[in-house]
Image (cartoon, rainbow, N blue to C red; front, side, top):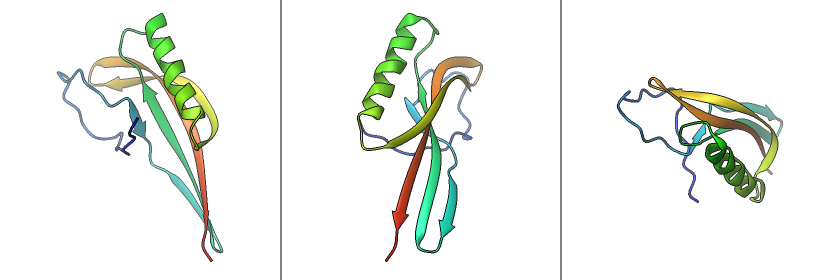
Length: 101
C-alpha cells in the first residue's frame, strides 16, 4: 500500500465518486531544541454505504496501518463528506519524532 499525503481541504467535484483511501490532515508541529515532534491525523475512507462491508474494510485497513512502523496513538470513527456524499471513515492520530544532532 502506497501512502501519499493529500490536502483534505481541496475541492472535489460532486460528480466524483472516487476518493483516496487515505487522507492526511494538517499536522501540528512542536520544535524543542533539536527535537521535532509532529502529530498528524490520517483519515481512512471506506466506500459507501456505511454497512458491515464498509466496517470490515475500515478495520482491515486500520489493522494494516497498526502493523506498520507508524506510531498510532489514537483514533475515532467519523463521517467524511465529499461533495454531497457521506463516506464512513476513521481518523487515526499518528506521532512522529525526529532528533537532530
